[in-house]
Amino acid sequence: MRMAVGLIGLGVMGRNLALNWRDAGHEVVATDSWATARAWRAKGVMVCDDLPFMIAALPAPRVILLMVKAGEHVDFEIANLVQHLGAGDTILDGGNSHYRDTERRAASLAAHGIGYLGVGVSGGAEGARHGAALMVGGAPETWNRARPILKSVAATAHDGILTVDRFGDGGAGHFVKMVHNGIEYAIMQAIAECHLLLTQGAGVGADEVAAIFKRWNAGRGAGFLLEISAEIANAVDPAGQGVLIDHVADIAGQKGTGGWTVDAAIEHGIAIPSIIEAVVARQLSGEGMARTTMADLALPREALSQDGLADDLEAALTGTMIAALSQGIHLYAVAARANGWDTDLARVLRVWRAGSILRMDLLDTLAQHVSDEMRLPLENPVIAQDIAALVPAWRRVIGRAIAAGYPVGVLGSTLSYVEAFATKTLSTAMIQAQRDRFGAHGFARTDQEGRHHGPWIFPDAEADA
Image 1 (tube, rainbow, N blue to C red):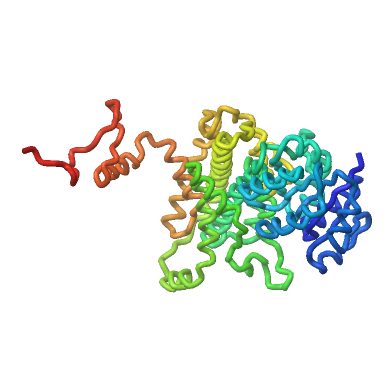
Image 2: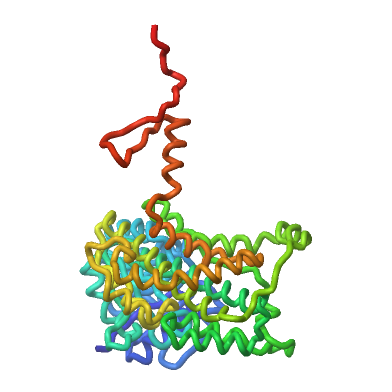
């Protein structure tokens, strides 16, 4: 069915979505706040010089997608749109907006009779052009109006299911996208740590590293991020200076979604060490002065033997992928219960299977073993046994890396996360005793009911008369 869609934002993502909609047979009418962006032209896409002209060119009820930078710019565009829209019109926010902002905007627009959906879009420019993963949050009636136009630009998984789904009201879709990005941070950093251990640690050449990554990408960890990492590992520098990666500055950027994931995990009391360490790694990369000072100390560092390294690293990377996915799903499960969102965890995993940056074979595997009642995928014995089988090789490589002096924040902290679940009595028994000693917080005993205190005397205790 041919439909008309408005588009505000003609950056890389907006332009490619416009072409995707055009190819699907829809009428696309677009504009942008920047004159330079409005200069873009493509057959079958109408680019308007101003917002009123774009609105006038769209039949009511209108569906308009915002593809602009998250934050104040979204509010700016909405304020302009409200002056021209009416009851029954729909605004879609396709940027990486914070889910709380999405809820605020949806409530405000509802007072005007205007529908609002937060649409998390994953897949980069390629996904926008040929099929993306779309994670939607908003009222059911608004979703029903916009679903046909969104389905037409979604990717198709191997079983023919489109990677577009609604997860609840308000900010549910943007929350799922935020969690997706947090997991993405962790897996990207884990692959980068593998690259460091192979190259700096064991002196493996670029072509061989690319071959190792390609071999891994034919295994259990197969997915888009490993695929592009294999491509990057021996990509030739277009400036003619050998291998490109050797000339890429090691200061990693971030747009905030990883940090938001950490904030949400703290709010909901969920342990996500893989994602936290990935955010920390990017933050550390920008501490130039401290890095220079420490590097000048020339701390001793040993070479790693190549013997068995690649196989052990593959096990460590696969375990980290499973654990990072489990952590993200755990966070969503708890937040979904708190906010009244959909608790079908398999749907979250399946919406990422095609089009998204996170697309990987493990998603189908995990989706088979999660349920609505579950909070943490590692609760399932099948998943727990699966990750436990990787631990011996994982321990070997992390032990070797730490002893030789190489940073493995995500690979190492994720192993500790798994080891903690497998430890019968954790170190936190001492923490609770410490809390009682200095703050009289009390503790539970393993052999008696009730709340208890230690033998120490508290400052407010009165001596017997």
